[in-house]
Length: 194
Image (tube, rainbow, N blue to C red; front, side, top):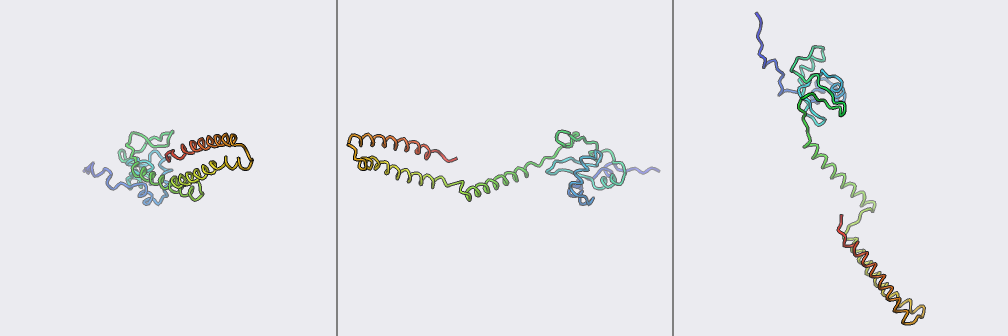
């Protein structure tokens, strides 16, 4: 008398499916060994294809049977899946699981930490300065320079014993120079920080 089997009992238990890490532990393989096998063996039993971030699922007993030489049962795996030559990704109509949320958060954190470290390194090297402190220094220097330019015409006239008419011309030239310098430095000091 033939024995009847329940089709539901013969189906793989997807709640007990193994991840890549679990399968590596079961087989005592390294992760690169498993990844290489998945790239080269199109018939390797896979329940669900994932991405580099995870999502791969395997039926442990089916994998062990397959590796022992037994043919894989139809419907138990994603065997025969093609490899996209452009990207090396497996395709074949199976849903891909993308884990972008965790990666995106980690990438953002890493990017922020890298920026902080780069800024610290620039500050340590003296490449970065505090904007407000630099504005104060430049304003102080501009004030001292302006006072020196104001005294310059009188000092020139005294040392060279020039006439008062020539002294007026020198004052006019130095005033023009001071205004031009103040205008140029003023636009630099008022520029918003990036």
